[in-house]
Length: 412
Image (cartoon, rainbow, N blue to C red; front, side, top):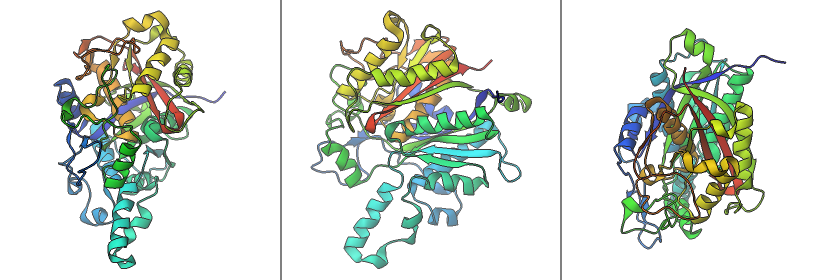
């Protein structure tokens, strides 16, 4: 049997509506700050949903040279910026050719919003107005490729577009690559830049998003009885994953260890979850099996908690399938009420939250949870919960019935 390696998280880079950098993101989360506000990126007058978690202070020149900015769109800029923050946080060095390092990214929509902008220019002014940048920006692998170019990484560069589970799946695939020995380390995470009129409007037409426009801060309310849909966000989250022994050898700070990864598909509907949660539970069980732990060893859960009526209920039923009566004892974090749902990027943020929860012994509260839905019998609180969790399960799901789960263990 081939040798396998333990996999450590040694760096985290966040560009989020709650701030840049893992520390700022975490501190604002625990402080209860809500980044959901009226959408101002474009004119959304007449849209059913007019709230979002947008990032207004991101300046790509803080992270990229002028020439690189000219040849990247917001999607790739967010990826490079968050990767740089992760590498800096890890004190990590990309030496030699970078052949032993991989880049794994996930995004639901890739460079679609830049394409939307260029389509408008084409219809307004013709082909000569379209930027050549479009050809190298719209595909989902553009972000991963730009990260590889920025750092000189020549190892595997793999991108997925697995809807809202994309970031979690990218991290899971990177974990597997390091574990198998395909690479010694990896940059992995999720990126999303979806705030453009047609893209945003399409989700509104699909009736997936909250219409609580008069109360933006209260619009996203995972597991609350009065939830009415998710709130779209934007941003990126990237991680440095390393062989555990390498991290120990270089005396790196270790946030935690990834020990299991599982995926599944509902095989049911493109936009609605399987109501009984059975395949969401299947992804979790696969992750637990790979981690070689029982449900009884899980001490906290980081929920997908999208704030949709069907999604939250199906997720709660999935937890019941896995944990049974013990579910009422396990603290659950559901934080999209603060940072919104940045589609493929959010799973990465939530894995960071799981890691920092273990480190600091605190589970963030669900700020808008006023009355938990009777059909979601979970231990989720509006207030933070103090608990020294050693094992956390993080769950993500998305359109297409795609589910992903990761098991994290606290650093030794």
